[in-house]
Image 1 (cartoon, rainbow, N blue to C red):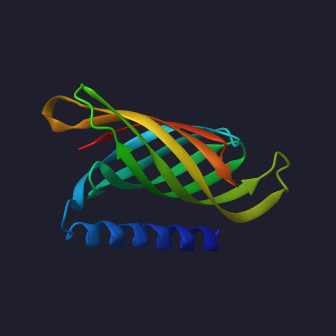
Image 2: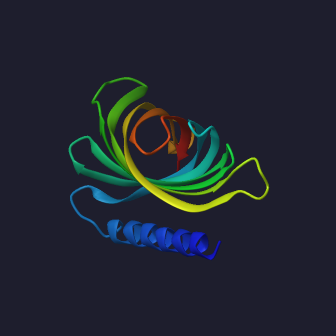
Length: 165
């Protein structure tokens, strides 16, 4: 359990340092907002809750959006550190589609149905193909809905919604 807490603390500190350094960026890169995200994953079947950051565009219509999530269910407690880059299609509509990729570090504690079973702490790294839509809401906030299809040792599919303030 101590390793789980240590790894979680290291990931959170790394994410905070990344956000802080991006806030000082130039050429469109910088802190543009943050917000909650919730969703579901398949294999393992988990409920997800987390936070995302909009760190601006480093190329025209290409946005960097890291996020972190906690997942619960399927006899696992999970922590996800996600580093997503997406291309936002320049359409003149209320809804903007996007597509991109994401590298995910997945830390989880596996428990089996037997109370005496504890596989302990595990870590995996994988990638996702990401597709979604984003729309602006009243007051300048943004709402998104996305689907992620996993490659490697990460959950097969994740469906998420989120808001950016």
